[in-house]
Amino acid sequence: MELFVVAGSTGGATRTSSSILLATGARVLGFEPLLIQVSVEGNHSIPIDPRGVPCAKAMVKAKRGERITDRIRARARNHPGCSPVIVDMPAQDVIETLLMLGGVQPQILVPMPQWVSEPGQAVADVRRLWDYWERWEETKRQSGARPLLGARPPSARLLPIGWPVGIVPDDLMRHLRSLSLSDDETRHAVIYPGLPKFEPSEMNSTDASACWALTERQVGASARIAGLLFDDNN
Image (cartoon, helix red, strand yellow):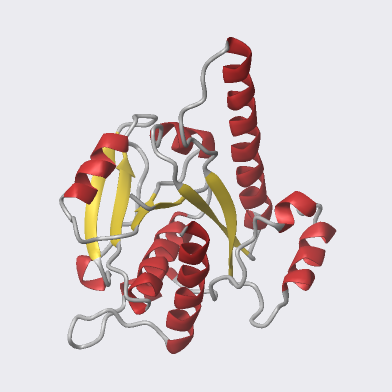
């Protein structure tokens, strides 16, 4: 099961919208993605309008910190022709997200919006995931636990949102370094190019036929991101 998880501690609308755009890109490339939205008690998710999703859609309800691996697998089994699986997680601590996904090896995408303080929070989320995994692996080694066959760290990468159209990777890295957000390790975690800026209201818009309606720019950017991700994962 190819699993892509859009996660992070800020910007619920940004994560949900990014999930939908990634699913759109997958469809453009000829895939049949399954989009799963996770709803956690006490955390107000933005419901996805079924008419506005260009793919199969499912919902998983959970308590905070509850492991949801089996439910994600069950939803995937109910859609046997769908791949990849894209999961829209709620806003919460990224370590809690990782624990809820225990037993699978997802590719975690952390949206990094240009606005307000969210670039810094996104970078901090990715670094926390890296640090947590390294500490966990070291703890297992010290205890003498055998590594699982084929196990590998979950991939955690930054997905730029709303950065200037046409910005080149070096310019983006220089800007992040000016904010003390980037180093050589972070540079390799940025998915480039990112997604264009969007308004949450755009994600609910449909045309007169109740079909998903995105701008040409959004569709093109979504397809580029999907292509990069799926090429990396194969």
